[in-house]
Image 1 (cartoon, rainbow, N blue to C red):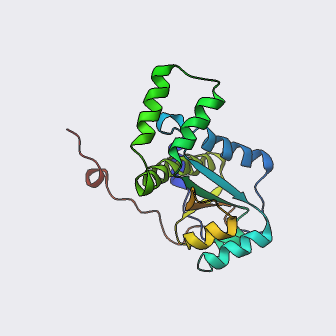
Image 2: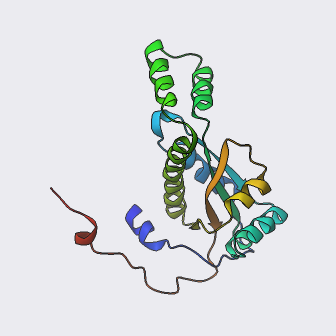
Length: 196
């Protein structure tokens, strides 16, 4: 059951570097990102899938030397795409045209997003996709660790990102070397939820 899988998962700090996630399972994780919901279906993000040892070593140096960057099988770097107008145009072109009403709605939406506003919106959309990847890993019995502890600017340089893309979050994916160091803690439902 899905909830049992969520209870099983934890933010794995120590991965078994000898165990690699299969190509088939990586495809499923990436497909969960591909199918994740996003505002207007614009998917204003790009994910770098890093398995190359040398590149992972570079990322570790820019990630405060956290071992997950090298020991995990794959590192997924979620990047926000702040070029909303470009994304709208790309979507319309890829779809082979849309109704004038829908196109006008998309263009109107993109007009209201620029600069930091666009970057913040795109980052929030990327985090939705990150959540789906976390859930997919749990469902597949694959360990993961979401991370924000890295130098975004250095990551952007290492990955050669253009000015529209900004690294936001990382998901280390692989298999745990050992179990959680302490029991899973969650606040009570009463603390988290208010029913009206």
